[in-house]
Image (tube, rainbow, N blue to C red):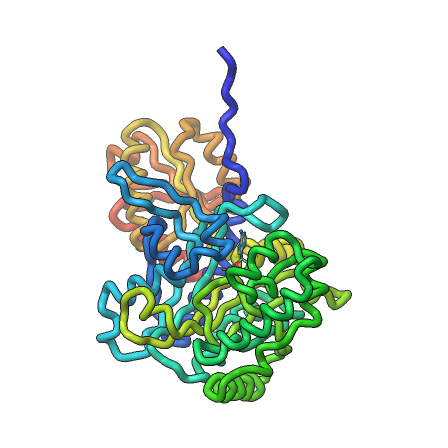
Length: 429
Ligand code: AMP
């Protein structure tokens, strides 16, 4: 029989115990800034109807047309592993009648997303994002707030050389005309475009601006800029967003070719990138924009909205190359609970739970039977006290307390032990 080697799937990976501390740190930064700005946490299911993203994200986007994990259930439904958060959150906003709440509704989340991308450094097929969304407010100040929060989260995580790239991609009033002149420009350069972009020319010329192919980048550098063709409303909105960024003293640059590859964006789009020593961009850490038509498109009322998402994996990969492992910051354990014999073990498990309820950290080694090896473990941990729970102690309901520094042992009645240890620990503080 051939041996089958079972491995994780390509582009999927384990987050090992030693990396959890980084995930926790990012989670904490997102959580604390979200709470400060009065955002509430939401969690949506990983599995959704395929239609949500086909309609919401856009059928001809790379994320949907090439990268979505989709399958039919036994019941015949076409479902997908979510490739991004925004459409799910919009679905939830509509489905749960959140338009009846005071507006705007401010939500945040973190979790795994799935895209069947070509595996490469820093790109995974299951990856993690944090996400911020504000629904029900068209004011440019919300664009400013979302950009500021995303920037603050990265700053909080000690990113220094970060800048915000910002652009406006207009709305249904001005974008159609811009698309026409963009198509005319790219058509005149068609032979210099990659085959994907030749196809995009028919479907959506804006997407060519997103192409990473060298030859398309060159053609792009001479393309007309949407900023010169915004309608009055979009122009005024963008001007105010920039004024907010100025006021907030956020470092930004205008990137007239930033479009972001999803269908639903209107007006403001932005990305936060880190510049390396040589000034080159390392790729986006986070990005987002306004999506004033998406709620309506997915069956809700006309509701303006703005959001952002950050790539947790990319953030962590950079943090790891840069700094020593963050402290686990666990409260120091000063007590070791040692046990002998069956009844000693049983009763000490109960006592261990009492310590947990009293929020006193206690180390143990219930799997070990010999007192000597348990004392060895206690020694290695450098605890101050060992509580010994043997046969005699279990029978007579007391415990032996050994001071590891002096070697002095005293007996304490079982019902007093938690209280007495609490006092001893308080004296240490
Ligand atoms: P997007 O949702 O495509 O705008 O991506 C937002 C951020 O998520 C990006 O800037 C990346 O940092 C991160 N990201 C997107 N796709 C992946 C992936 N396949 N693997 C790891 N991170 C990703």
